[in-house]
View: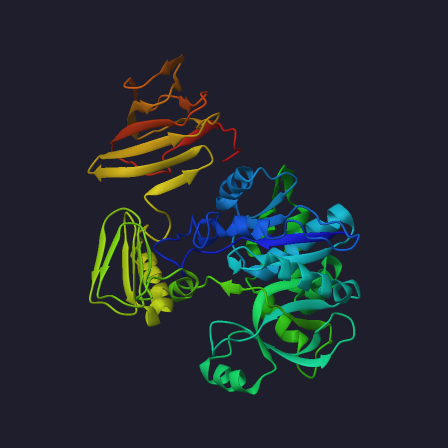
Length: 481
C-alpha cells in the first residue's frame, strides 16, 4: 500500500487581499521563501522514507480556473507524475478530499492519504516526515489521524483538539476526545491555560477507503454527489475534470462534517491526534504573515520600495511604487497596482469586509490583479477609457492564444520584443520588434510565439464593448470552451 499525498489548493483569495485575489489566491504567491506556498508544500515531502512504503507523486485538488497556474508551478520545478483534480465549483475541503479519495481508489484500490493544505508554512520538513511515520500504523488500522500544534497563545482563528486516552501505536498519539472548529475567544483562553489541547494543523493521515466509508456514513449527501461527479469525470493528463454533479454538492469542511464527530461521548473513536513540532504556521491573515517575516530593529517587516521613519511593529509591502511610512505603529500597508490596504494589524481579519463590499458593488479588484495570468502567459491592462483599452501582452515561448474572433471590438498589435506568428483571416505572417498589424472586428485571428524568448506586445482595443467575454474560440490547445 502506497502513501498518496493530497494537496488541497482551493481558496477565494480573501484573507490576504489585495495581494491575493480569487483568480490568484495566496498559495501561488512567494510570501516567506523564493518558492510559492504551493511549491513549498510539494517540496517539503521530498526525500521522505516510509520503511518500504512507496510515496506517490502529489495529487493536487484545485478549481478549474487555477489549473494552468498549478501546472506551470509544477513544471517550473520540473516535476513529473503529479495529477491535478479539477473542481467545477468550490465546495470546501470535505467534497475536495472525497473527490481525491475516489480517484486514489480508482487508480490504486486503496492507499494511505496524507492531506496537506497548500497555504501553510513548515520550517522543519524532516520533523513532519517523522510525524507521518508515527501516524502510519494508526492509519493502517483504520484511524483518521490529525496533527495538533501546541498552542502559543489563545487564538480563535483555529480549530481545537482535546487529547483523550493515550494510544499504544503511534508514539505520543491520543484518541480525539473533542474536536471543535473555531470555538471562540472565551473558550480558547480557558483551554490555553488548561493544557491538553492542540490547534488543528489541517494535516490529516488516513486510508482513502476509511475516509470514503466515514463520509458515506456521516454525510451520504456529500458522498453521493461527489461519487456521481467522479463517475462523470474525464481525464486529460495531468488533469482529471470532475463531472458537473460536483457543483450541486453541499459545501462543507473536513472539520465540520467529519472531525468534529470523531470526538465526544457518541464518537466512533477512530480519531487520533499526534503532536506536530515542525515550525508550522498558517498564513491565514496579514498579522500572521507579519509574525513569519524577518523584521528590522523596529519590528517592521517590509517588502519592495519602502521608507519607514519612526514606525514600529508594522507590515509594509509595496509592489509598484514608493511607500513612505511616518510615525506609525502596529499597522499594515499593502500596495498593489490597483488597490491599497491600510489597517491596524488587530483589524487584519476584517479585510473580508472590503471583499464583500467589492462584490456588492460588482467591482473586479477582488477577482484579479491588473496582470491576469493565462495558460499562454499573461496580459495587463495599462490604460482604459470610453471605447478603448490598452494591454501589455506576454506570450511564453512555444505557446499560443486560441484561434478566435471578436464581434464588437478591433485590435491593433505592436510587437515590442520577440517574434510573433500572426494569423489574420487567410493570412499567416511574422511580426518582429517595432512592427504592427490590425485585426478588424469579426476577423478570425491567432497569436503565437514559436521563438525561444518571451513575446511582448502592446494591444490597443477599440469598439463598443471590450469585455473578456466577447470571444468566440474555434481552436484552443488548452481545451478551453
